[in-house]
Image (cartoon, rainbow, N blue to C red; front, side, top):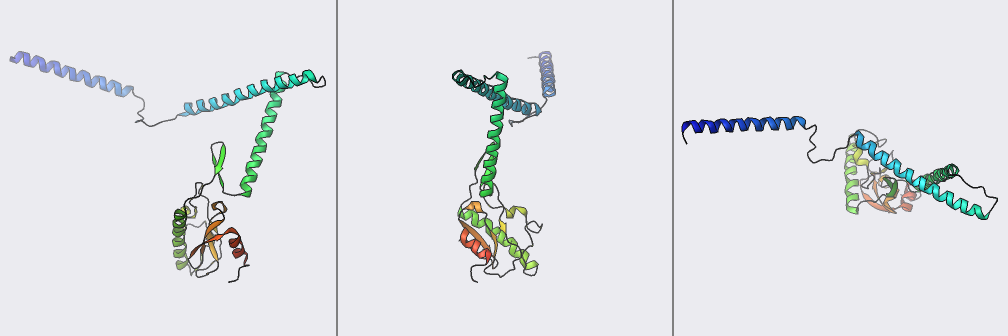
Length: 237
């Protein structure tokens, strides 16, 4: 290869390199957003999902309306006193029945939550039992709260906090180790060294055997009945 051929090859290579850079720049400018493999939802996706849900329930409502109308008119053919339903009347009856059933389910869920507070957590459109953690995790969680309470009592003339919403103790420590993060039950007005005075106990959804922290720093497992008796003062000191 002579000098002229070498210069021609270098010139062609430089031209190809410049063209490649130009193509890459155009492609980079044409890309609006790089998601790096992560799922990204924008407002249009949210609207589309909502419309899909509405259309699904609308389809179910229309199908139910047709079924109610056919069933009602079938019975009306045997009982002349029953009026026949048009589609609009059947639609109103079906919608009214759906609203009544929804109110009934809400009342049942509310009553269940009042009878067993903290024992259920919402998952989507329904509720599941609020599962508690293992005994070791429960004990470690209460021990962490105990350390913070004892430190507070040492710094405040052996008095525990007047309530559990102060900034001295992190709010995370007041959460029991269950799926819903139910808060511990706190009994204010206790002092350090009260051996028979419960300071903190696990909520009701942890079952009948609940861990209890006493004023002297010990942790015991008590049944709900014994805990209630201890709180009411029926157990002798």
